[in-house]
Amino acid sequence: MPLPSPCSWLFRRATLHLAGRPPARPGALLVQEGRIAWLGPDGEAPSPPPGAEVIDLHGGSLLPGFQDAHLHPFIGAVDLLECRLAPTDGPDRAPAVVAAWAAAHPAAAFIRGSGWGYGAFPPSGPHRRWLDAVVPDRPVFLKAIDGHSAWVNTAALRLAGITRETVAPAGGVIERDPVDGEPTGVLREWPAMLLVADRFPPPTFDEMLTAGRQFLERAARAGLTALHDAQGKDPHPELWLALEARDELTVRVTASRRLHQKKGAEQLEELLAAVGRWRSRLFRFTSAKVFIDGVVEGNTAFLLAPYADRPGYRGEPMWDSPDRLARLTAALGRAGLPIHVHAVGDGAVRFALDAIEAARALGAPAELRHQITHADLIDPADLPRFAALQVIANLQPAWFCRDRSYATITLPALGPERAGRLYPLASLLRHGTRVACSSDWPFSGDTVTFDPLEAIRTAVTRRAAGQPPGTELAPTEAVDLATMLDLYTLGSAYANQRETDTGSLEVGKLADLVAFDHDLTALPIDELPQARPLLTLLEGRPIWRAR
Image (cartoon, rainbow, N blue to C red; front, side):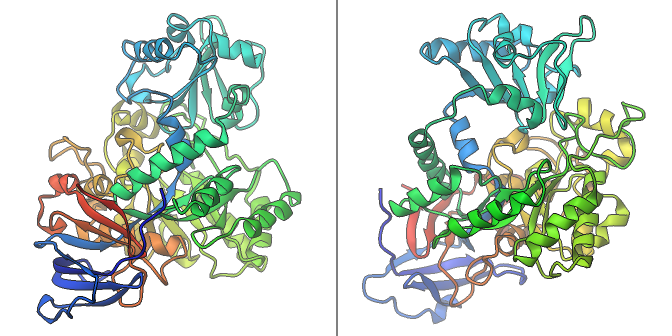
């Protein structure tokens, strides 16, 4: 359905959140012709123009729209249409969920799903036999909650031709049963996962378009007005532009295009051509996506020192050397395109920083907005390098807690010293680092949500929802609510290259706004996610309104 026309709005008795100037202050704000026309004390508010809607927020918060600087909208939207597992579904529950979905979809020749959590299974992980017992005749492919592992049944292994003799592709792992050497059904990282996934028919364009519409409604309801599609592969650009052509696109979208570690300079021409070809008022490519490593939970993160529970093994980077990445980064930089780097382990973070530093030495502009996303573990010596190299830390605050896999997987893998300094947000800020916030949805941890308020609550408390005081993860890395609101608005707008027109309440900026039913600063922090958006605007047009 096409969006309504832009409206004039006068917000009265609002709690205005002004970037970098806490605390929030009471006031009023006028929207005209899609932009913020005035803001100031409520008693000095101008008369509303003819046709304007006056909204009394009764002290509720008025913020710039939230911006998610790294997520996977179409992947997550399609996931919602498939078999959904909860992170707590272990061997006793997950097979029953799959069986129920299979029974409800008898015509589905292939069964895809996602959401299982590492912490719900033994350290050896799930096993194909548990799926074979409920679906023996149809291939099953289930992504883990972080998207870096898959659990498949024997029919799927057979479809892909995977046997005990199959050699895992570079960068991937085929887990083997220690008793008989046969594949267990767990595939780690996409080089291995694609052996099966590529045999499954992809969703159709129309199916993805429908899923995208459902995502946009959820995003507007959460107060999101801009995002970064962190894997802008085909047909994602065409989908975004199709939604925009139908006047159904309700967020501003930036995206990154994959820079493959297995390819050389020959890929740059195609990548830059795509960046130039797919561009509109609401959509554009702003970076090249690079993967350095995997995740700690799958033992595929690249560390500086060995895993605590695997002596002598520290993971491997997906690139053979920082120098090769540096040469490609320099070439992209000369064309004005930064890189957006997946790096989880401290070894991967250093690898990325080294490559970016070397690219500058090769003539890449210093002012490019390179980003390192995730950065779960950073060696203390590398903390000041982010600001020195003008690298943005793109972080996922919903992860800043002891989640269900922390005690059984993360802590044994890293040991207490490294696990105790995960997600060093406060340290990065003290070193002057620019920080953006994001969800990585649908790979967003136990919460499986892109709701900024839940993520902000976690970052401020360093606890998962429902956990009592005393269970914080690295509590010295906590920051306050005002800082988190800034990072999820102006911080992410800077990463999305949209801070000139969005990200803060300033006269002349676009009226991408979200109004809440509560003053966020007055709520106990654990109750923050209970606040609800009353209205979300994109350039003055209502894209969500509470009924």
